[in-house]
Amino acid sequence: MLFFTQQVRMLCVLFAMAALVGCGDEPPPPSETVRAIKTITVTERATGMQRRFSGVVEAADTSSLSFQVPGNVLEVNVDVGERVTQGQVLAVLDDRTFSLNVDAAQASLGRAQTELTDARREWERFRKVVEINPGAVSGRSVDQAEAAYLGAGQNQSYANSRLNLAKRDLEKTVLMAPFDGLVAKRLVNPFQEVARGERLFELNMEGAMEAAISIPESEIDLVYLGLPAEIRFPAIPAEVHNGMITEISNVAGATNAFPVKVTIENGEGNERIRPGITAEVNILFADGESETAYLVPLRALAPAGSEGTSYVFVFDPVSSKVNRTAIESGGIRDNDVIVNTGLNAGDIIAVAGVSFLRDGQEVRLMGGQ
Image (tube, rainbow, N blue to C red):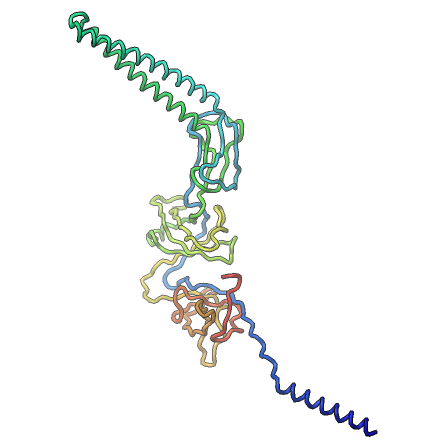
């Protein structure tokens, strides 16, 4: 019985020690998860008269390609949509006729050179005879020999030019890409007879893109070169690109609208913009107001405080934190709120899950923004 009592006492001591050790070590605090947020950059102004125009994306630089000599197409090496590099062979003509022309021109040049050599010898022979015996040869004979020599020289120059032209025509039987680009159109097939200057390919230069829109005559006077614009693409709804008006036609087209080109600024995501897709161009026409306000989505507004002030969360790229920023609202326009004060152009604001954010919270941009 005594042995059993001692065992019970030892177990109680062990349990007590374990309880003391457990109470002394506090569990480590859970690590805070860095929330991913979706953002936009504040760019769209609300002051002035804003208009939206639909258009089509075009390559800023495009070229129609053709052979500079007529002939029968022997090869076509590219198709629509293919990317090509400068100097790449696009098509080739049958060059047999052009090769024969080079051979014929080469033979004519050889004959002209022989005639020139003979004429020069004859003229020099008459000159030497006159020097030794001035009366042995008439002056008329000397003049005729000199004229023959000069004529032979001109014939040689002409034959040489004919040879160079024949060689150039032979080189033109190969059509090469003048720059890196994308084949937008192909209008030729092998074994097709083509004329000189007939359009065979349309090549778009890679890189610069522009949106082609039409502006009514009632508003064309408000447009000027360098006027900024904001461009969206229905095919790429998540992206917004900045642009600038770089070309304004002086002649109205259909429905008395003037063609206008808006160059799309180079930036991230431009590789997804392709010629032919639809573009929606927002242009802000100034109305003389000095106040600058901005449009932000309604979903960017955080729940208002007890004082009724509206807030948004502005992302700080240096600290990777969001700051709760008070704004002054100037009303609602469609699905946007007009912000009179509190924001500046270029501010990055959260537009999703703002009710779960707090001031000074560390976040990361969603999707590598």
